[in-house]
Length: 212
Image (cartoon, rainbow, N blue to C red; front, side, top):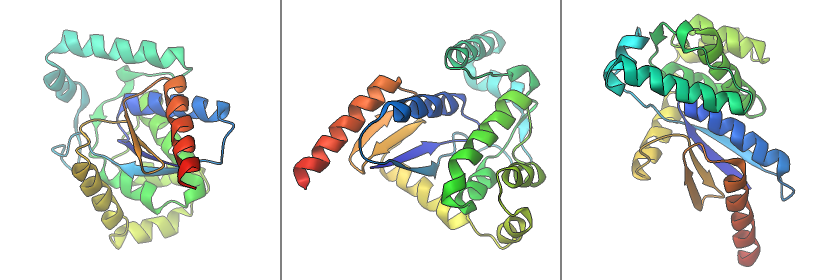
């Protein structure tokens, strides 16, 4: 069973959706599941050096009041699944392409932990994951060779993989994340509850059985 997860590293609902998926997989008693993390960029217009977070979010969400309401909604949803969100600590909205390249170059068995670490760095610590040094530190903490990773990034590696993901998302007309593709057949959009994800997993397993 393969689950492809389109996500952006600054998307709070992607973090919540990841936790829901984790809960679903803990309850799953079917065939083994492999996760494939795919890149998605919510705002390609963010400059390479990043942008002021609150200013950008206020403009995007229609003003300070709506922004604070959205933050409160996410914080409440996160709390219900054991996730902390500290929007007050975030100063910079980063361009996320570099973070996606880092994930693409990370060994498969370490990718999920790195995605988790990046989300935690952004939403609990307010770290700027648009900065290379921050990403290298996060990757190294998950057992990735930071020196080798730096060299590969400097050679431009990881770019092709990210571009393929973005092109794939465009082909599928993905308009928001998280977006899950289960067994290359079933698409699920949004931070769905674990039971919903389990239902799709069971359906996908049933379809695979029929094909076999």
